[in-house]
Image (tube, rainbow, N blue to C red; front, side, top):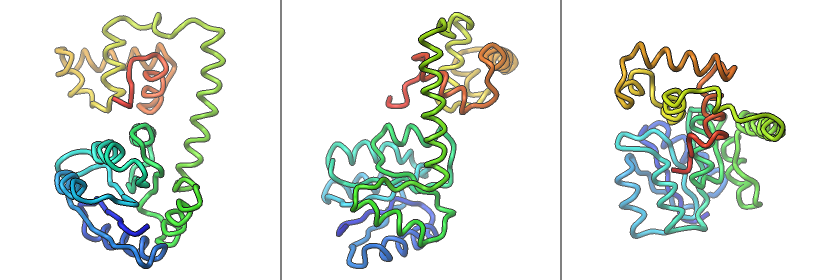
Length: 221
């Protein structure tokens, strides 16, 4: 890994990640960008071997960088480095083209070892993320079997509730969803409560999974 980009807006995190990279690739040339715009500009004149990408940036999402980098430098290894360990952030990142997903609160050597394993074809995943993906795949397998033997859950939801499920799956909060659909906050809250009750779910992460399965949300878009 000769050319490495770190896309991270926090200086302390930049230093931490730089140390982890150098622990695995001592001869790497490392550049740090604070914003999405700066990183996209950097990408216009350079071809990275490895990119460490934060998801939440001052001027946008790290997912936009991952997609652009994938199109112009398809051989680059792209690893999300973040504090978010939930499905709402994890699966869209993998869909966008990330080769790994590391949590920044791990010891530096754990991150360094995960990055080094990329050269052997092993995805760079934090242990918690590996477990989450295994749990998701198990649930998806169970859901697939159930969907083959039972009618779609969409018949349980009204048209408005289906729209609301698609919106909240995209990460919008109740007030934002209400504005998008042109309803009051209380109406939006009632729709969400009804959705959870009808589908037997208890969290936004479950709502995302159901919305994907029912075709109401595509994290790739």
